[in-house]
Length: 78
Image (cartoon, rainbow, N blue to C red):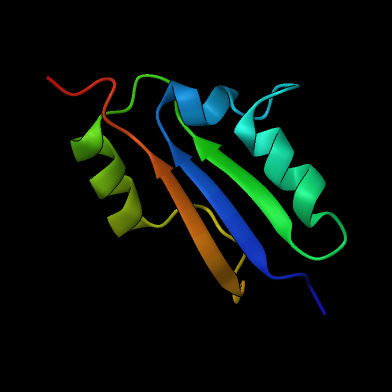
């Protein structure tokens, strides 16, 4: 049985949050052994692009039990 999933998505801040000391890596540390934490951040993305990506799907494994989605967006919006 696969672990439940937490997804971090948004712009480059979300993408880079999985580096040492970032909030993405803190989530991985906090939830290890209980949840799979997936990085779906994309450098340069704005709100419109992320909305389109949500409509197409976030490349999450089929049948995944998504429990939380962290959205970090806005730094590339004008």
